[in-house]
Image 1 (cartoon, helix red, strand yellow):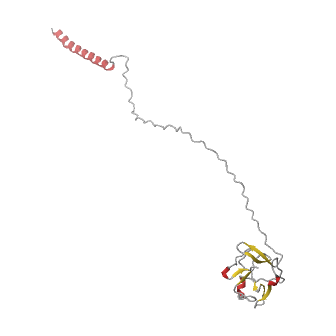
Image 2 (cartoon, one colour; image 1 turned 180 degrees about the horizontal axis):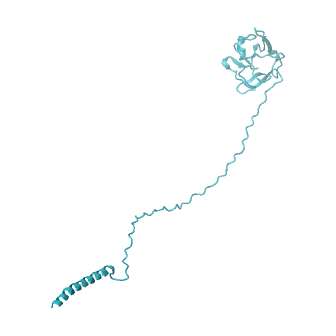
Image 3 (cartoon, one colour; image 1 turned 120 degrees about the horizontal axis):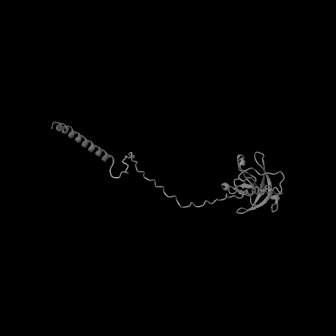
Length: 202
């Protein structure tokens, strides 16, 4: 009885230890294998979360065609021809004193160049009241040998000697003058000037 008691004393603890180890081994297998044996239980590495990228919308290309560019040829201007200026030759006469005619003036006396001859109402026949300093603007008319054109009478002309000894042609006694205001033949700028100067009528 004593030996059975010793056997029992050692046998029970051993059985209990075997049971515990068996249970522990089963639990370990249960944690490593579950369900389908082909299932891979290896954990995948964590994936980094990539922020969503908003797609960039590209506007559609314009389908409107640009109008064709028309090449305009350069405009070639015709060569300009300068106006031809006709210079009228000075009027000359064969006589010392002649008769000219002009619109709004009528017939009047001119010298051999066609410049008008004047008299002043300040003078009187064979006498001049015109101061000598004034003859700068109204030069006296004189030619050594007087000839007259058609329609004129040489008897109507004479010679007047001024106080300074300057000689001057007269017409019907009135001393004759030229005018510095006349620049070319045909001018009568001195006519009626100041109300005392006039062209000489034949």
